[in-house]
Amino acid sequence: MEMTSIIAAAQAYVTQTFQQHENDALVYHNLVHTQQVVDAATKIAAYYRLGGDELTIVLVAAWFHDIGYALGEAHGHEDTGARAAKEFMLSHHYPEAIAGQVAGCILATKIPQSPNNLLEQIVCDADLSHFGSKEFKERNRLLRQEMELLKDKKISGLDWMQSSISFLEQQHYHTAYAQTLFRQQKEENLQKLKNKLGKKEAEEKVAKQVLHKDKKKDKKAKDEYLLNITDKDVERSKKARKPERGVETMFRTTSTNHLRLSAMADSKANIMITVNSLIVSLLLSVLFRRLEDNPNLIIPTILFLSSCVTTIIFAVLATRPNITSGRFTKQDIQNKSANLLFFGNFHQMNYEEYEEGMEMIMNNSDYLYSNLTMDVYNLGVVLGKKYKLLRISYNIFMFGIIVAVIAFVIAILFFPVK
Image 1 (cartoon, one colour):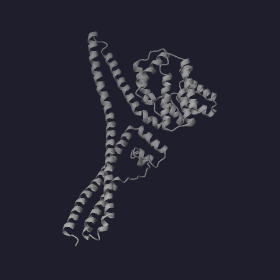
Image 2 (cartoon, helix red, strand yellow; image 1 turned 90 degrees about the vertical axis):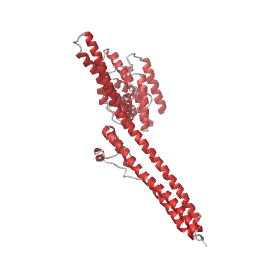
Image 3 (spheres, rainbow, N blue to C red; image 1 turned 90 degrees about the horizontal axis):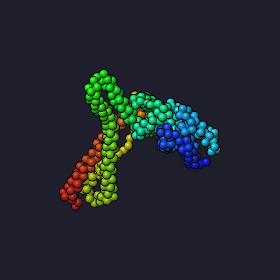
Image 4 (cartoon, helix red, strand yellow; image 1 turned 180 degrees about the vertical axis):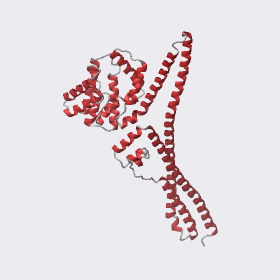
């Protein structure tokens, strides 16, 4: 069976199963969540250029990963889903090995996740991709509601926030692409939860402190105190968020400006090279033939030609690329001396070594900002050299033109050919 056919069959089977076993308590682990996981798995798989059986394994596993909720109890739903997926693959005449890999991807999503290969990592990351999405707040609310319905027990907002924060702090994405794609939004979601938890704890603390006071005074004091706490928390939250966003905006803007200025420098250098090349061509093809008849023009021509050639040299130096070694070592990463954001430091390394280095950077915010700072600094240094050489080129061209024209005028007026 072709890949698109088996995936379409899996989609139809899972959709029909959720519809036939409709459960009002499954407000989170339902067909909507399954479709979101499939979309995330498709995106991650596309980055790693999966195809054929590998893509089939990932997408079928994504469709079946939570079907166990519809077929049985929430506890052990991964085992139920793995069995259903394996039976489905075998019924469509797929080899036992491929059916087993589909089941393995589903079993790997069991918390705590334990993927053993890239395919299992992709399914695991897709299953928890909502942690790094702007829909996290709504999805987290639905998950709490589902757990309350399934356990028939109310979960306090404080307890749920604490467990959500703990889970987010312990969870990590397995593939480098998922870390890049979801990391920033996940950290923002985690920070929002912490701010909300701090405000909630402060409110409860205030409520306990004023519990024994007069009811009227108690209400007034509590309202005033909570108002102050809320304002402080909001202000503190803004201050906590602004530096991170401000720093990222600063790096983005500075890098963009440097690249734009570098492109402008290259454009100006190309103008100098083109104009002076045309002048040199004209001098060599036209004027040199007439120097025997006009010996008084030899010196002005040499001056003009020299200035043009020198201008071209400095313009070429301004645009000439520098090639570095293209390798870094683990010691460089540990010493935070390797800038992995610049291609010249890794272009001769294999992907596994580069991925390992990038994972170390992404897991260390200080090292990440250090690399960004180093990248901006190096761009500035290169830009400074470019504009210095470009200025010299323009000065030589300007003064060379002036001197050459004066020399031609003097040669024609005061040293005419007899």
